[in-house]
Length: 237
Image (cartoon, rainbow, N blue to C red; front, side, top):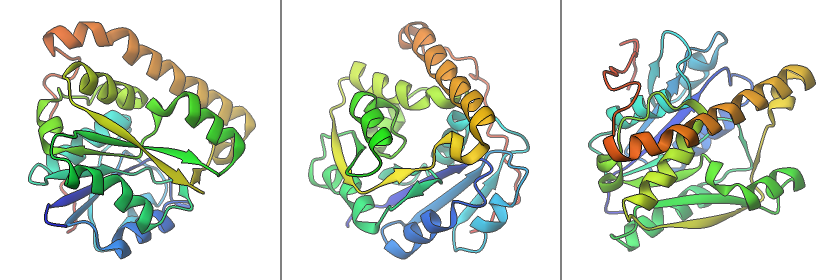
């Protein structure tokens, strides 16, 4: 590919799950820079990432997914395309990753591609069918990233905001089907009780982002307007 493509993998306490994802990204050879942003994990997430030739950035505490992605965007400011990849995916391959990147290389007017899981687990596929806007696997052009406001405050609402800003800015996007890919559910990660609580918290953050969006759309004045990426400068290339 003629364009520089960077990758952000935001991760919070993904030690048992993230190794296949990072390995796939590195082995694919698609990326000129890979940033793993550890959003204040208390487990060995950072140590798992450091087993690979990636750039690691650690937040001193958990700021949420929006902040992790904003830190990654700031680091990858010289990349033409930036791909976003969750750390808890199952079944992802280099072919899946390339399918998100290629449309942006082929069509300069395109601003964003978003994955949609199919032919995986029924419950996840069903959620993807109706709420693909929440999918974290997406690629953005530099032009779109440049026009986005700071999203550090948005936590799990970050995908909703990226999609809505792109639409309102008139930046075209497209869905890409990802067969046989799924992810761990929150109940699988944390157990039925804590997993349900984590799921409800995620939905609350998404709804908050939706509710506050009209205020941001007109003014681009965000709760985190003075955001300065709270990374520990204990990073590794």
